[in-house]
Image (cartoon, rainbow over all chains, first blue to last red; front, side, top):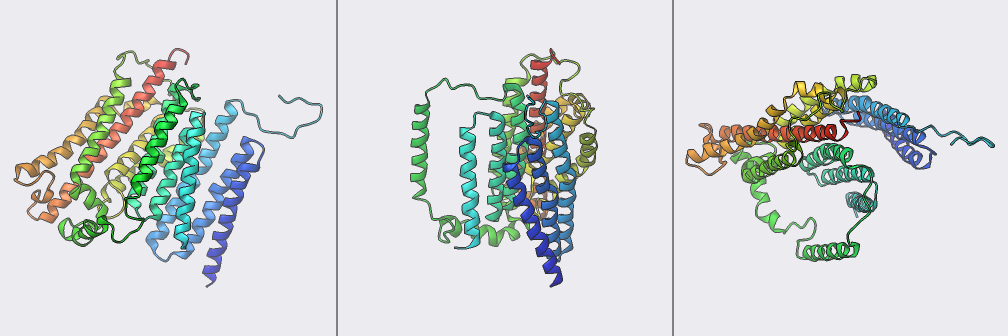
Length: 106
Length: 332
């Protein structure tokens, strides 16, 4: 029962983080902040969902498969975000800053 | 209205939106990424329909390797679509007529999930009830794919092999011997994190490919998926550590021979059953016990598929990459 509550809590918070990440991708002003929103979905959202699923399952085979998936996501998703940000910065994209009156950034 | 029906509708709606996005977008890079998303969505749809083998293939082939190959094509063609030089209305009329005919054709098909559809009455019960006794595989999909429909799968393997030959003839042999000594696809020395993480990930990917290859009799998987995953690991290695390093590990002429060898292995299994007086690709003659024969046959045939798929994918990527060298070699 308590395990059920914890697992549903993880699933719901994970789902909420995924949705908020999707909203962030649409609402944030520039590439880098959007990427930040997407990486929240990847790391914490999927992590919590997988934790919730682990708590739901009783078979060790399923649990170990889920753990493997989580390790894989944990390694690949920050790496891809890093590579993406680096590529963007190298190709000359500057992070968005709040426009200041009287200063021309471009 | 069940929740599964709702999920079906939502996924199919996403598929239509993505398809329209691909057609409308002038940015080829965006089109390629959308095509990858389209494949992932179809994979999700197949999972909802309980077709995990197909979903696995779609995810690894459609979303994985073909996206990589399309992206490497984009380095040759440029990112944006050329302004159209042909008549757009003519194309629209042709597409419209074809689409209407296809939709008209669906009216003759049995409705979705119809228990009385011919396929549910004739073949599917036979496979479900008898395949374990006849072939001895827990995974029915594998026994259908590799044993009952072995001839079709042989055709698919030959198609992949032919595609590899086609790419090689179009791009590979155009001006042989003029490849620059140092490839443009240089090792990413400045990307330390990428190098470290790929070093950690490539061995598990290769092991996973072998698992998919040899576990296909018992769970989802098989030669096609395994070959593609294996090729993806090699392509990742080539992209992160440079084409020259990858060429030292994987000899290009060996990989071309391997792509033919896989088809040859598949065909020879069929010939062996021919010579033993059975039908082409009837594996029951390969051992004293027909069930063991089926096991050996499916193992060999899937191995042939895996070898061909890996070799063709890797050689297509190498061909694209050396073409990039030829185009951009001067200003590197």
